[in-house]
Image (cartoon, rainbow, N blue to C red):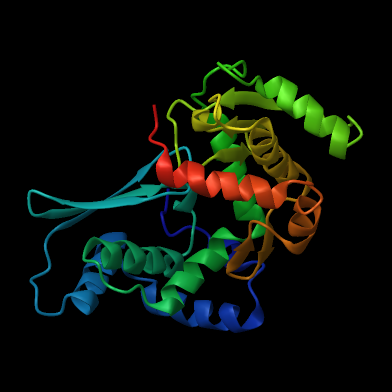
Length: 264
């Protein structure tokens, strides 16, 4: 399979200005291998450093992430097979992103935008979701915790804000008591996960309810994509979130919770 793929597939749905740039860049990259593209990018980022050998492999990851490392003097790139059919300019952009991160250099905006624009295409987002469903899995604890039952929290919020019309997704407590991610909604797996740090007697019920309600809103108000930007909490989401009567109090408790308590 040609890793540079079908140029037309990579160009579809781009704004005109990006389409013209992509066509020009694609023409320049047409006869470069993926390893040669990486070597050229390396010379641009580290012009005074001899270019080490480069290896590129496509891996069946459960998401759109790609990895880079230096091992035994060789730069190794493990690229999501989601990009196996992407045009060369997208791989060039990813090479700039990964090599810049490897050496803690600023990522040039033009390459970051090019890559994000590609990932935000509707067909690519659909493919990412399909891959996550097919390959990913959620490692969570049952919804019945030591203090709170997530099914009970869900039904209470469902009745209060959604007229009990929302179908219950898979619910579970996180395996780790995270203080940075208190809740997570995975639409690909139709799953809501709450951090088990909330499952403690000193955490008021309305705080756990607020986090549950927040995650439920993600099922109603999905991410909005505009060009290179993705609005995880669009205006409609923020407006609905304000309907929770104790939102300010809950956020205040959460700030204290995250700064003072240690995960058990």
